[in-house]
Figure (spheres, rainbow, N blue to C red):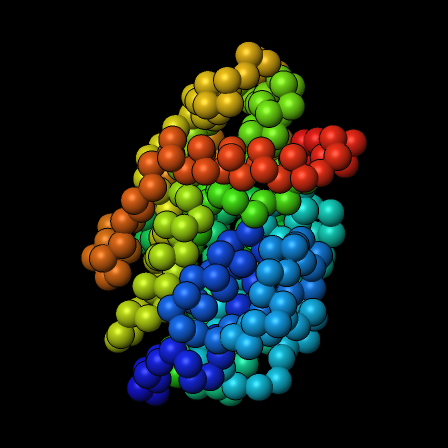
Length: 331
């Protein structure tokens, strides 16, 4: 099947999970480029407030619904970001997490097949598990515990990748797979439970920052605006991109170093509280982005300090709007 021409202002682009942290930024960037957007979200982890400012915008339509049920209509493209992504959320109902990632991906692939459009599947660096190769390149098959507590998400995303490739092989759907590494920025839930939202909120409240483990485990943090630019390039690049593409920032930092950086940027002297490391928590995580650089001409541009200050200032504004009694602590 030849790749359809992607032109702003024609059929809308469907963003499943579009009310989430990454999803609503993607919706915003798509509309800025002239694409009408349909946002599908059941609001289980997405925020209605993330998209409320577009009420009445003729280029934006919100559909509250479950990705598993699919959606009528035809679209210029489909982005499938629908899944809880934070352990505090996907572990609440692991069966539903697996169902969303497998059956939801299947439903969105059928929408893309009907629409004869490009399909972008949001996968995750979690498919690499607790890796023994650093940095992680796309040909690394991972070290995942298939029966561990995180398997509902890890294996759900691995199954979603398999479905995506099989729709390309069997039906000729123009599919793209992005493996998203740790992403942060404005628009997170207060109960997100992941490292940067937790650290920033604790530092702003003057509470000790909670680190699980000894703090020597590493992560690589990509600001959401850089990530979305990578998603858009993956979506719009002509030709065939069969293999998964890592999108993330290769600037590796230990969790303890990140905590100290956030304490300094927030001018907090609250200190650090160390606790036991959860099962199957990866010790190192860092993307090899050579494929994204070669195929998409993409590299992250926002430094960690700049992105953290944007995020800290966003939380300051948000917390100023919410009574202190309603601000959630760490999950």
